[in-house]
Length: 578
Image (cartoon, rainbow, N blue to C red; front, side, top):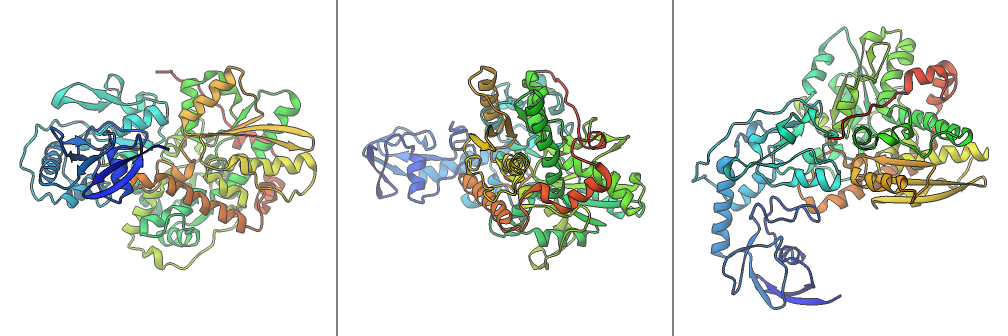
């Protein structure tokens, strides 16, 4: 690798040829502020906060797009640089809605952080403020252009990483804004509700639809029996909202907090994840044995499902008819559990704690009900649960561990890894392998489907059959994979797709990662947390879940039975491609 010599703030160093000045500075732990920069995604120098002074240069230059050159001498903290950054920041703030105390990103805002670091004490300019109507149309995402700083991050993540393009820049000059096609509401374009735009927004221009008040009201209603389910990925991320290390398993404290909030029963989505494997694994074997449509494609991720409904109509019949674990849980809670507990299903109120904003949309889909009752009544993100815990003045870190309640509180190691890319595939293979061989196999860790590579492929020989599988995460990667299948370049039996990069550990409802450079590290640590829980679990195969076995014995009869189809399966809809 060819190296070049560069001097930054008097420090001489060597960096690989092709590096930017920003990269060179960060290699020396020199902190240059940025607002629009996202490595490999949004490198456009739009905000100008990263300007530096180059010896011999005519003007200050944006370091995020400035190539490092041999012999270059750079200053990142000269008087002219400090003055320029202060002016740039004041101009941004002049048009920004500065209502920090009531903003969802208060104390967790990149603009606020940079303003504090640079020492902004007043804003000398008064920019023309255009008042925009806050778009509340989506069940998942609120779009507030009054807070937008035109960094372009949401546009790039939506186009490049999610291959959706729901938003873009429009108009010019001071009237430049980020909006949807023809200024339609977010709910009327092909937004897949994944919330990745929220994760990268440096301010509060994008946020999840807040359903905490709805849940507080249900908890206060004596006629409602309020039960809650917690998704696998929440337990390794919630602690971050309370200053705990990334990837810490806070399952016990989370359960204790939920009981303190007043939920009548605290259950685990791992239970219905195991149930999903029984239903989906059986569906896969039926398709293989009976000439059904292959590959079978997982249907656990609502963002991915909506993406497929918009863009890949020819693959709708390939999607598993299984509802997601969230929806399966709700259907069982309002039937089997209600019957066992002697409660009118109409009085069972189901709340989900999810790492995903698209789960809010999924819960409201017309197909997601049984006999006129919605499977799930309210969905909270990991961030919203943290908000409720703080509102209740519960000292989360001091809580003693508690356990899930019985009937729907038992989950296996296979279920917990649903929270990371490749997890559903691995869980399914553990069960399908045992069924095909008729043995209790001990080698159950399928390493080829693990990791953060965008598309992973494997061929697993099970009882003489080569089962070909593929895993994709992030819908742009899903597009690449489906296009290769459509072109006849690839052939699989089973495909897992997760809408968010990394899967649920990086869902749109998870804690905001302020230092975007650490995103990949955070994803890996959260995934490691889930794999550690799996490894420590005494039961690591979904079909060995005792509570799920009992559910079939007492209520559903067998996987894919008529009753199981009525409660646990669904269908999909062709949606406009634009």
